[in-house]
Image 1 (cartoon, rainbow, N blue to C red):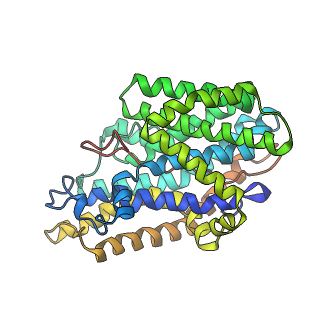
Image 2 (cartoon, rainbow, N blue to C red):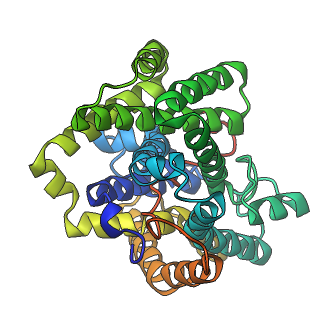
Length: 376
């Protein structure tokens, strides 16, 4: 996005971020339109294209896009921040301001639109816990996945990861921190079934797997010897990661990202303008898709019906609405507001490299009511 990249930007990751956002918004969360959420006779099996192998997998397993976002975030943060933080060349205040201004404009739009629709039309069937606590928690990016604007749970995890990353790079460095954080994530994952904690564990494991892999590659490319602690620590986590489906996906996705990084034709493909454009609006897609769903549900309820979610034309209407509204919001609100906030918050602060590239996180699939939170 404008003003976020500079020479540090990894443009070939943008397309992956954009595709991950679509996997969540257009497929995994399409369930919001169907039974049991809207008292509809439809099920996700009747969604457009659900019988096709690739499309069906997106409807059933699109929540894994959240883990792809955590991986991409780890790669970007290692590339942009690890050395700067370890060397003390960027302070926590500057780092935090950059991250908050990246996430908050889109979060505020999704939060505000969802709250307005709930106030206007009632619960609409897909919202979570409300009340003053839920409202205030959402407003300040504290969301356990059960609040009414449940997509922002992943932003809560992201902010926690940002703080831990800064602390880990400043104290332990990029060689020691990844194994420690991954093992902490494994311990949390095995000890709890609480959604927000398992989501946080997913974030820790995916994010720091990527940080560790990026550090090992950096050492090899520079001719340095990778830390034995890093290599042994990463190797020790592999059996667990392969055992659990979500983390096995992390390993496969990391291998795929490595192939893209190594092969120039794949990098050029991933850096194509349409994919970069999609990546630019990815956070907007993620944060506005729920209120767009609520708006469409409200419109159909107004005529005494339910959305015809099994029709291809309705899926196309929804997808087009998400892309169009996200694009307009990104250009007219998200970027200008982010830049204005950065000018205000970063005035007088010293940083070695200026604004950092956009985080690729954010998007992970939110918890869903009635039974899908364990996967989401």
